[in-house]
Length: 312
Image (cartoon, rainbow, N blue to C red; front, side):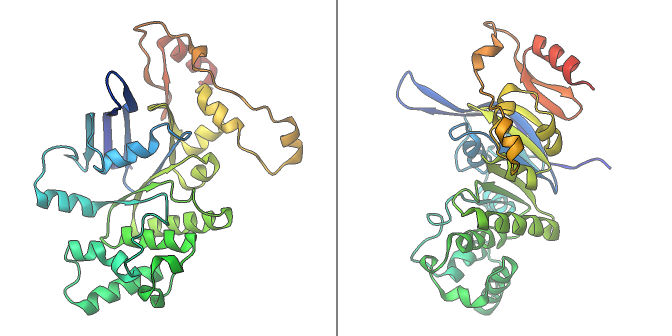
């Protein structure tokens, strides 16, 4: 059965001017698709452009160039207020910092119901409150929490509230921007398991942005790797983890510790040096499919080399 494409990113660019002639190419001509019901993980070091990619997709930033096609419609095209409102209901975001993303002056019931109010999803105050109670219970909290303020909750609980807020408008697609990086390790798995459970129950599609490859592998169907604004590799999660092709991906994976003393004693950390590619000016470097479903940023000569090396 063919997968149904929900989001299509074509040659997306997000450049920031920091005073002439300087320009930061935070996202530099990247393309990928996301299919309905899947989780695409986006990983890379801090500053690689992965969060900027998510924020540009959801229109928190206007794209410098390229297209974001959601369900057949260009997200960054001209839209009326009603079109934007409908789009904002379909696509929601879970933010990285569970402390800064909640208004400290608002009760939790009002934080969660903000989207319900904007989109007119409750006809009465009673219905509004019942929806808030249902959402709190959905994310593993109690209805008694509705009258409390954000400072009364732990980081993990606040992130659950952030998830409840995102779910309040019944979205189809959620961008999770490093949703567990500010949490204790013991809480991270709880939040990720909650997201997996909700995805199964509600048929959600995720873009899961993180820098922890091991956690991304656990939640993702496919993984894309970013380096300095460019997508350098994209493949199924297990394929990427077991058969990394791009040297940068190999360096990321070599840094992941395993609970195996014998392995750790002999683990060799690979370092990535972009100059090792030795690209010539105007050389045709592009995102190419080395194996079915496994794409790598490479030159034509590297492409032939990778095909021979990884075709089996």
